[in-house]
Image 1 (cartoon, rainbow, N blue to C red):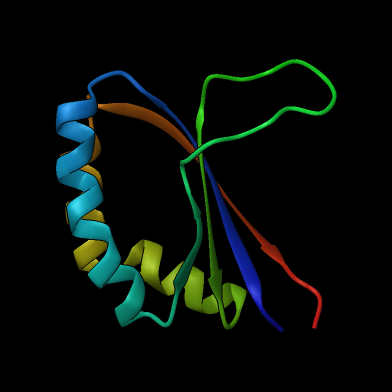
Image 2: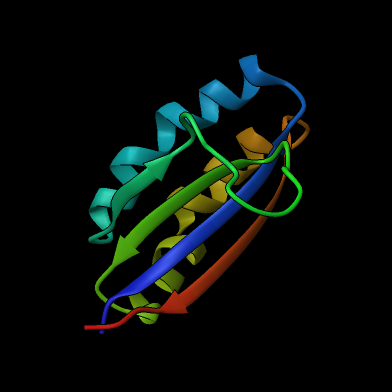
Length: 96
């Protein structure tokens, strides 16, 4: 079943965060992932707005998302992101 990695990031240093953003597409692709949402315009239809950047990726499985996150390549990218953003990563099984 597909899995979706949902990221909420509070960016505090956009210049540094952009360096991280340049690293991630190749890593995500290597592990079979695809960006579905990567920031961009949002419209809040109900409830309070949140300033966090929202990113969503699709993987073939929860295991594939976990492998990407724990990979040496992505762990190195996390070090680039440190100090530039506080992030929350959640993986959820999707529907077929």
